[in-house]
Image (cartoon, rainbow, N blue to C red; front, side, top):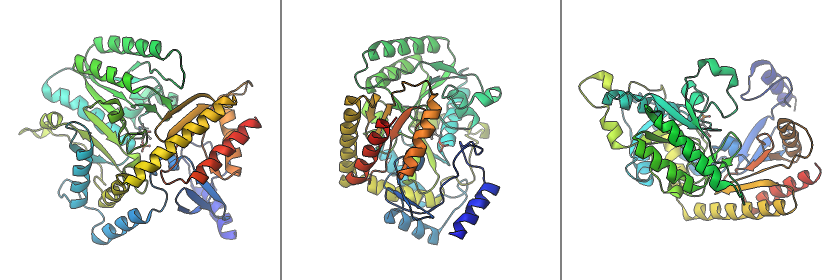
Length: 434
Ligand SMILES: *Cc1c(COP(=O)(O)O)cnc(C)c1O
């Protein structure tokens, strides 16, 4: 007990937590162990991790198969410079992911996190055109898109609501509307038509290197969803303009949005796909940017300056690759597919049940990601409602982090029916007291 008190003091003294106003935020919980959907704190209290620890965890905390794969790899080779060496875990993981991805997405560039996966795609797209001798230097993103915290990722995600503070360091990007929609939305067709019209106009301004989009679900800006149809139309327009298409599947990848990758649900093949969060099952930070042979080929030549002179110290870290391989085995098992289907059906049931009682607005669902808006008849700012709800959920043993007035659940695939029913039941109870 005194141990944990002194640790909390040291945290307060030495640590700076992400996305947190330390002056007003409740102190962080001291986590000591985690298993499945549960995280246990120093007081022995269990919390259900309904956000998969920032969307990274797929198969639950502490999965023994992934833990074992990392331990075995650590005993053999922990890290090696990837500009000089290659190794079996990196090769096998790349080959297996390439097999799973649609079309000829098969050339894998490893990096460290979602932001770098996006940064790599942007830089590759820009250099691809440079290497071709074509003056294409502009990027198009979508309103509300979030692609990470590095400067390039911020620039194409400048309307996600997080970056006003750093406007001065971003490069200009063109932003198209995003036809954010929900169950029974009567205006979805007109929103899509408007978005496509404006996208067309932005493409016609010319010089577009690439268009970047989070397919099906915009995560950080509030689990804002669109229809697969819309993505098909975007792909057609981007193709017709000659620009490259980047899909940021950092969150939607690895079964999150229903299909293994969101692009498959939409039946589209991008020129770049960015993968990270679920890649190692939530055990280690790692990412990959996967592209097509014609892009890779444009970087070949006798001149070093044609090459992609970019890389990170821990590129293709063998421990991360070993975790990725073990996570993939679990993901591709029939049990996991069934679990994800059950999860989606349970989400559907509760979204409808809350909506029927007037406790939820704009219900929306893609695969294992369920979200809705909390009806807000008061004049309280959304952020205030969100943090009140978060605090209330915490006391009930739930890690749920509303984005403004949006409540979403994105649990590990191993979540049990009982755990999920508890989470949704508590949400219902809390909303009734609002
Ligand atoms: C989280 C996220 C990122 C950034 O990933 P980090 O690992 O936080 O750098 C990029 N794109 C999307 C869609 C994300 O959800």
